[in-house]
Image 1 (tube, rainbow, N blue to C red):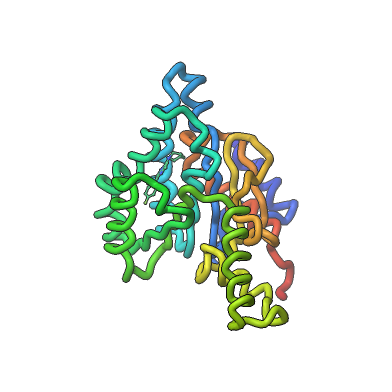
Image 2 (image 1 turned 90 degrees about the vertical axis):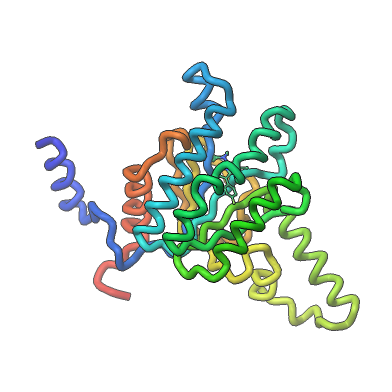
Length: 253
Ligand code: V07
C-alpha cells in the first residue's frame, strides 16, 4: 500500500518508476568505494571487505550484461592505492586471478569482453598473467565490455597522452594545429570506448578521485550512500532510473 503511494507519487511528478530499456546509458563507470569501511563496521579485517566487494562485481556484471548495457568500467585499483599496507596490496593483487578463476567461464558464456585500462605492466607478473589470459580469451566477444581500471590514474593517463602527442609533433609527423579533442580522446587509454553517460560512486564520498577526468565532461554523476559490498541490483536499478529521469526528453528531441 505504502509502496503503491510512492509509485503513484512518482507518476504524478512525471517521473519514470522503472528502467526504460530504450534509453539505457551505453557506458556506466563505477567507483567501488566503502569496502574497508563495510568490513570495519562488522569488525572484520579490511581484506574481508575487498573479498565481499569482488562478489558485488560479479552481481553487477551479470545485471549490466542482462540489461544490455554496452560498457561497464570499474575502478578496481588506483595509482594511489600502492600507499596502503603491503599485506593489503598483496591481497588486492590476487583478486583479479581469484575473480577470473571462478568467473571467466561465465563471462565467456555471457559473451562478455574483458578489457583493462591503467599501467598494467607495473603489476605483479601473476596479476598481469591472469589479466592477459582473460583479455585474450574474451577478445572476440561482442557483448558487454567489462573494463577494469587497474593501477589507473586519470592525470597520469592525460600526462602520457600529452607526452605521446608532443613526441609526434617534435618528430614532425603531427602539426600542433591538428591536435583536436577527438585526437586527445583517441590517445587516452579509453580509445575505442565511448565516454560514460553515468558515473556512480558508492559509500557517500562526493569526489571523483582522479577517475576518467577527461571522459566524464558531460556524464551524469550519482552518489550512493551504500557501501560497495552492499550495492545490489536494486541500487543499480535506482541509479539508472535516476539517470533516465534526469536525461529524459519530454515530447521528443
Ligand atoms: C578488486 C573488489 C571490488 C571492490 C574494489 C576493490 C577490491 C575484481 C577485480 C578484477 C580486476 C581485473 C580483472 C578481474 C577482476 C579486482 C582488484 C580489486 C585489484 F580482470 N574485483 N577487484 N581487482 N576488488
